[in-house]
Length: 406
Image (tube, rainbow, N blue to C red):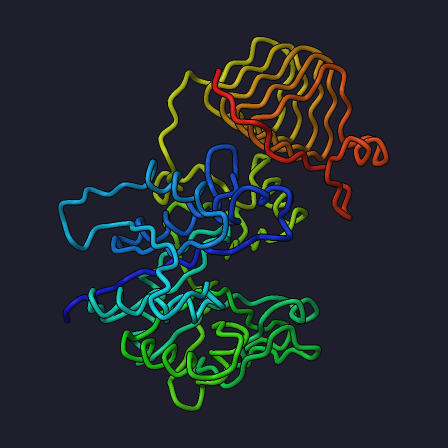
């Protein structure tokens, strides 16, 4: 049997307003994560590890940071026509309008599908942290004879009202879809859990063209999750793929099965970083069989002159000089001076932490300077007077500083 010709379309145009101030100057997919990555690196790595090399990335809001990252760190060979990662800003081929939703973003770029002539189109979001072998979802799609397949993660029924919930029959065919329902329908196989949509889809090419073309003629939100999927269930065979059945090489027994996080707000973003830490992290970045790839960083190995570093990740070229660092993520080219105390914090690259500074549950964006003896995360009123952003959970965020190269 011939392997299907697959085209990937990654939707990377999100504003990420709930991640502000980290998204003041960049879109959500370009926000740094884990000391050396950007959020979009996770979905791109999943496609490349799955040996799917034909990828269009649709960008929109504040896209320059993302474009720079992709053109600098995600170049494929360029010699083979089916191996590319191409950035596609809004072309406005149908008029001077921005993307009005995920389905409209695909509709406005139907020429890409028509020119590539794929059998299947994988439409994935760009702002989640997870590992996934996409070929296993494709195999499920083909086995079921589906025209569309939605990746779905079982979640406890008591928390399901916070998600888009898909209702399925005994064969996993979707028969209903509700956005944040007050009474979620449980899975047929488990009354204590419901299927939440992950926002990742596999479509037969012709079905996708028909679905988004029909949607463009109607007054809807033009979004796969909020409007489109629920309205095509009677006309198309749409199935739910159970993400817990996905087996990724190299994942260790201690990791959380089916790890997937929507880092859509500051609390979830901070918590996902904490999931990287510990002797048995819920999500272990150290997996050489399914690596998360990113731009190559040039610099010396991290250096600890003296001090105490416990349960932390330290980036390339960073220097810790007689400081105390506990359960934190330190990006690359960070300078931590003597007498500093850092607890449960995320320090992004090219930042300097001055002598005697204290940070707790803080997120410090790139190119910042924390002044000597400054205290962050200990006094909410003081943090707010300094114009730091303090979220409801008490996480303190300092926006991106002025670019400087030293």
